[in-house]
Image (cartoon, rainbow, N blue to C red; front, side):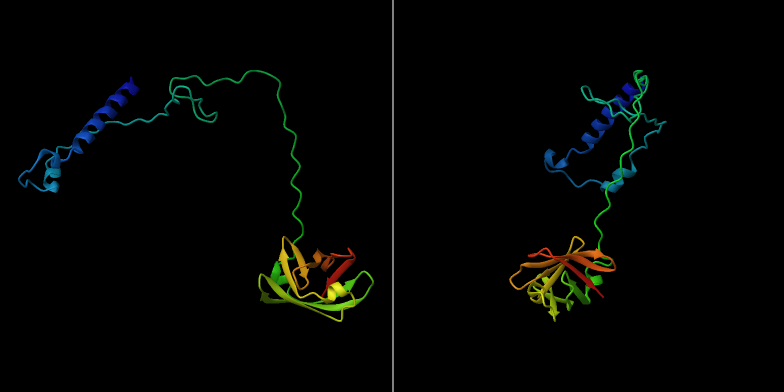
Length: 194
């Protein structure tokens, strides 16, 4: 009964609002009448009543959301009896690869490089841009691939050392208090420490 009263009320409100939207411009020329504000002041107030709210049932052919409350007057569905399934705990995701603390700015500066043969040299990673990379210099390096390093970049937690022309000379990750990795061509180990 409440639903039919609400439907009737909604239809009446809709009819009244559509009638209010009719334009006087369609009726032809008229003389200037009272201002819109004056006509609003003369409209009698509508009596107000108690308003109640209840969730509506889903439209025909549409299943109700499983977490939605049942419509008024409906019985809540009782799940069928059956074996209880216990979900096994899911293993936590693998931790992300280690990233140098502070990112790119943490690796800027001068490093002591040691290759697999034990030879040492200096590698400096600058914060000065060089196109889409950053400038790098190597001095005193016996390894020819390391000696030609001219640029570097920090991506996905790794430091990439580049030679002129864009070939990658080495890839390094944070480890052991510095950066550890390998030369790209030979695969020989390379470590950079402060």
